Image (cartoon, rainbow over all chains, first blue to last red; front, top):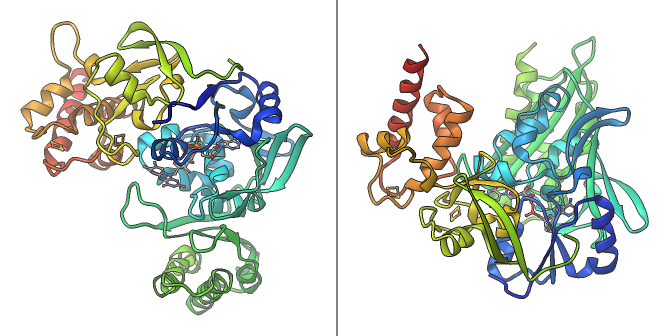
Length: 286
Length: 164
Ligand SMILES: Cc1cc2nc3c(=O)[nH]c(=O)nc-3n(C[C@H](O)[C@H](O)[C@H](O)COP(=O)(O)OP(=O)(O)OC[C@H]3O[C@@H](n4cnc5c(N)ncnc54)[C@H](O)[C@@H]3O)c2cc1C
Ligand code: FES
Ligand code: FES
C-alpha cells in the first residue's frame, strides 16, 4: 500500500481534463481499479495522483446516436453484458463481456480501462476492432478521435496521452450478422486469454462471404485486424477447406507480426484450431 | 473533490448504518473495512482479485474489496457478511451453508455468502450452471464446491416454495 499517493475525484469531464492538463504526467486515472489496484499493491505505480473517474457523467452510458453505437469509457463490463442495445447492435462485444474475469471483476472493470491498459489479451479489444470503433479522447486541446486499434502502441503501452481521458467509444452497429468471439484460456473463469478472436460476417445472395471483419487477440503485441484473411474469404463459399486455409493464413500472419517465439509452437496450431471453430457455424449452415 | 488529498474524508453506509471515516489515499476498501471498522468477515486471500475471499456488496453488486480504494466507498451503501444476519436470526444462506456442510475451514465462506446473496437477488431460482457462474469468482480449497452449490440450491428451492 502506498502512503504518499494523493486521491482526487473530479465530478465532470471539464474538471478532470483541467487537472490532467496541469498534472497529467504525474497522474493515473482510476476506473474499476481491477488493473490499477494491482500496480498500487505491488508498488509499481509511480504516479503522484490517482484520479478517480467514476463520478464523471460524460463517461457513462450506452446509446444509439446519429454517429453510431456510443459506449461510455466508464461503462462496466457487467453493464455491457446486460444491455439490450448491445445485445442487438454489438452482440460480439456482449459475448466477450459474458466470459470476462469473474462476476466481481465484471461489476467493477470498465471498457475504457480495458482499452487504456493496452494488454494484448484485453477481451473487449477484438470485438471493438471488428466494429471499426472510434475512440473519443478528451484532452487540453479538445477532442481527438482515433481508430480503436491505434489506442495501443504495444503490450501495456497506451497511445492515450497522459493529459487525455478516453471518453467513449463509437461502434459501427451490426445487426443480424453472423458474429463470434472465442478465447482459449488456461481455465474457464479468471483466465487471461492466450488466443482470442472476433468475427463479424455476412453472406451475399449467392451464399458467398459478402462482408467480413476478423480480429486476432492475445497473439500479437496489439490485437489486430487481419485484412489478408478477410480478403481471402470475401467472395468465397465457405467449406472446410476454405476455412482451414483462412486459419493457416491467420497463423502465418500472426507469426509474421510477432516473430517466432517459444510460444509459437503452441499458438500456431491454436490459432488454426480456434479459427475453424470460429467460422464452422457458417459452413454448417449451408 | 478536485483538491488532491492524502487522507480522504468519506461517508457511507455499512450494513445500513451510516459511518464517516478518514482513509488513506492509497488504502484499499478491504483494509478500511477490516482495520478501521473492525468488520473482519471479509478476508484477504490473494489481494489481486483471484480468490473472492474479500467479496462485499457495493450498492448491491458483488465486488472484490481488495481491488477497490477505500475512498471509492464514499456515498455508497456497503454490505458485508456481518450484515447478512438480522432480527436475531441468521440469514437463510448461512443456515443452508451449515445444514449442507458447505463450510470446512471457513476462510472462503464470507465471500461465498456475499456472492451467493448477490446471485439470488438477480436470479431467485438459478439452475446449477447459473450458480456455478455466479460463484465462479470465489475459490474454496476445502469443500470441492458441491456442498456449496447444494446449499445455494436449497435456499433457491425454499424461495420457490414460498412464492408458490
Ligand atoms: C481477477 C482478474 C480477472 C481479469 N480477467 C480479465 C479478462 O477475462 N479479460 C480481460 O480483458 N481483462 C481481465 N482482467 C483485467 C482487467 O479487469 C481489465 O483490463 C479491465 O477492463 C480494466 O478496467 P478497469 O476499469 O478496472 O481499469 P483500471 O484498473 O481502473 O485502469 C486500467 C488502466 O486504464 C487507465 N484508464 C482507466 N480509465 C481510463 C480512461 N477513461 N481514460 C484513460 N485511461 C483510463 C488507468 O489509468 C489504468 O492505467 C482481469 C483482472 C483481474 C484482477
Ligand atoms: S483477496 Fe480479494 S480476491 Fe482474493
Ligand atoms: S472452506 Fe476452506 S476454503 Fe472453503
